[in-house]
Image 1 (cartoon, rainbow, N blue to C red):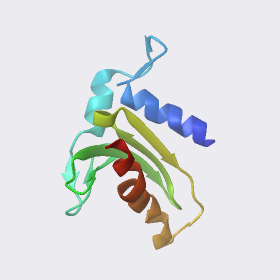
Image 2: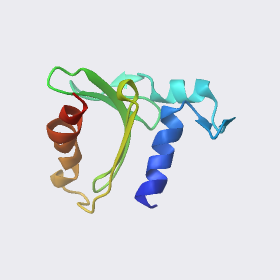
Image 3: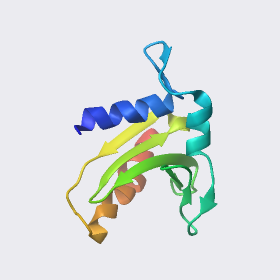
Image 4: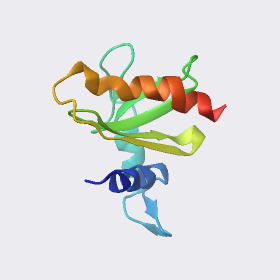
Length: 112
């Protein structure tokens, strides 16, 4: 999947299932799949195939995201009208979590 295709999925979710004036996925499903279902630890919550966490020094930006093994992420930050995509090849490695640091260190501060 190309990064631009990943971004389209993020945009579809950000727009609550709407694309080019039409509904592709119901708003109810987007809301249900990205809402809190359970807490995995002090940082991450989980919906239906979408993870949830906050970014920023005070956790002021709530986001949900899809993640793949190796560093592939689709981050959706509704309050900032933002979709951020990362690709990576750090399979089965702790380095696959680098996009979290990039979000907190560079992307989120650029919003202010």
